[in-house]
Length: 300
Image 1 (tube, rainbow, N blue to C red):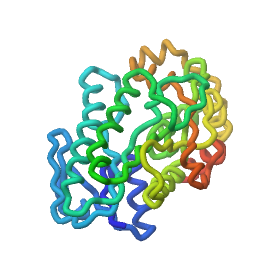
Image 2: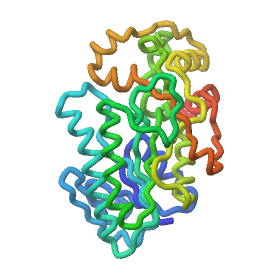
Image 3: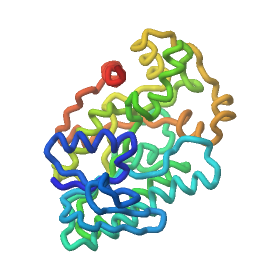
Image 4: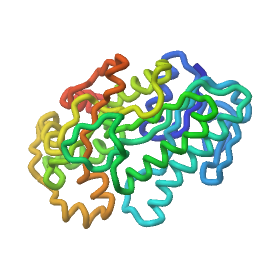
């Protein structure tokens, strides 16, 4: 397939592009500046809604991963960038795709399990309604911004991605230095659920959505075995053969990270990949221990 990819320089995109290419697919990166490195004369400025597909040619699929990183304290300006980069960028891309002479068959657009808000130990699948809070609101608007593509006849998949396990970036990479020193531990009470997925399984799930024409709409990209933060940190400590007893109390996290602590670190959602399982997707790393072992082996 000829696939257009946004967010190619991010954690997921930088792993996805070579994965797809190794499977025989042609990957064109939609970059913020036209250059030979983009694979074609294709560029966009999502903040201004400008897109030029240039000499890309016919596209069979589009994978949209671009968005402002969530890290750092959430000032009003930062929160606006988080929202606009996802919502405005997605709406502009969706509208531009339906203007192409030949429509791509599928748009796979990133979303997040933040859609569900903080829901305790309630088991959540794709049929469950959205939750409350800033991230839930952003995810609702993010998914709704794909409407122009869906209404124009493109099959759209909204991929609700959980915590991605990679030693190269994301939550796991930020945790590793402290845990390797034996200074890791649970966050707050540790009862909040973390719905996670191994990087290799996320890449496989994205490929699965490209090829499975019965998949459209919301799709949870998570392992079938979500765990509490306490279990996650205990397992990570065991894999590293380090103690994991240095808990960070909730008040300290809020002082350090502000609103981000409440929304990302202390909140939790127990999410299951119902539609992936129903369509026969096979997880390579369904268990947390084996997934962490594999992620850390990639760091050797």
